[in-house]
Amino acid sequence: MSLSRPVRTLAALAAATGLVLGVTAGSQAVLAPVPGSERGPDTLFPTQGNGGYDVRSYHVRLAYQPRRHHLDAVTTIAARAQRPLSSFSLDFVGMRVRAVRVDGSRASFARHGHELVVTPRRAVRGAFTTTVSYTGKPRDHTDPDDSQEGWVRTPDGATALGEPVGAMTWLPSNNTPGDKATYTFRVTAPARLKVAANGVLARRTTHGARTTWVWRETAPMATYLAIVSIGKYDLFHSSMRSVTGRRIPIWSFVDPTTEPSARARRLLPKVIRFEERIFGRYPFRSAGMIIDNADVGYALETQDRPFYPFDADTATLVHETAHQWYGDSVTLTDWHDIWLAEGFATYAEWLWEAAHGGATPARQFDKLYAKPAGNPLWHPAPTGFTDPADLFGAQSYNRGAMTLQALREQVGRQDFFRILRAWATQHRHGSVRTAQFVKLSEKVSGQQLDTLFADWLAREGKPAGY
Image 1 (spheres, rainbow, N blue to C red):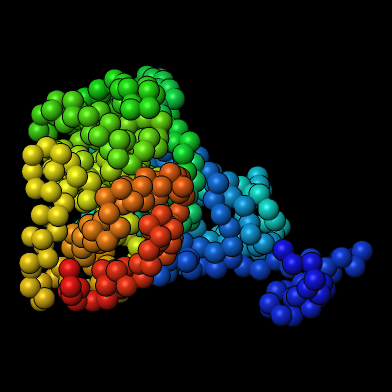
Image 2: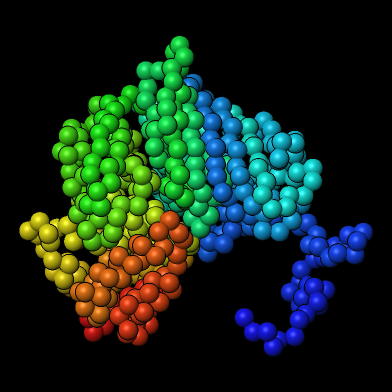
């Protein structure tokens, strides 16, 4: 801080920055309330997420009737306004909103597409709570690449999946990955069914034909990583000892109509310890898996407890577990940086394969680099795509992993693994951008790496000279 600079008056500062001021009876200038933006900070999904506030926690109460496919729900959101807000919005689509309360008082609301715009009786300032009561038949959501997410019905219940935007079908939220929060899920379902969610199982209580399950996720989590899964599961509860000596509880939910899960369940602690040795201590309080009869065509790194359709093969188990460090704990701020999740998890697969007698990461790199210039691997660039349908393309996974191998070749093995570990440690439970990873890599290695990262992440086409 420089003390030699002249002090500007608040009024002058407002004129320079465009802030709106009000004047109290005591002549003290204050910010006048304004509507919060209905657009978020993400460059790929700018209509997802909302401006003007940060969410601190979600308390979600759900009562689901699978036969009727009916949901009664109340979500309470604790947030902090970044400046006084006369109104604000949440991402929420479908179902009927019964009522909205802000700090205990009824608020008016309107639906604008997938935005729920809330106007409280009095402007919110600083910390505030919003309670949304809603009911109806939750819907699924089809992404631009034709994949299915949202509240997905299954033969015996439902699984809520959120990547990238499906959380808005069942959870009123600030649905952008940069706004992480803690969660409590209180889910009531028929007693014959079991309920999985994120975090630690706090309790379950049965009253007649209904059971209520309470899950608490105390680590910050992005909305797209939240899961609620209801079905006729076999529940396996155990624990494991981590590399650091922690006892980690494991809750796994397996649909008995899927492939046998015993091998995957035995392998999970070994995978966690393998990745701990490379990336640092496991970042969460619990672990597990959800294997469901849900024909969505993809696994998902839902926090603590990844989701797998039908089966958890070794490569996918390694991949989704690696996401607990890269994607879940260290979360991208903008969807254009998805390589920070998928490239890292793919590279973890390469490390596992090499450690178990398979191809080395260098060999994996060479095999992919041999693909001709017209191959989809090289188009578009990992951070340069503009079509949301390309979000889960080869450029995010394979070219993202190749970026890491190119970095390893440039800085050397020792600095490379120092970078991976520092990235997971320094940004634990945070939100990040590619520029921060470049800066960290340069700091650890002492090298200037702009050209390398531009070649592999920003420029379309096959990088030359590698």
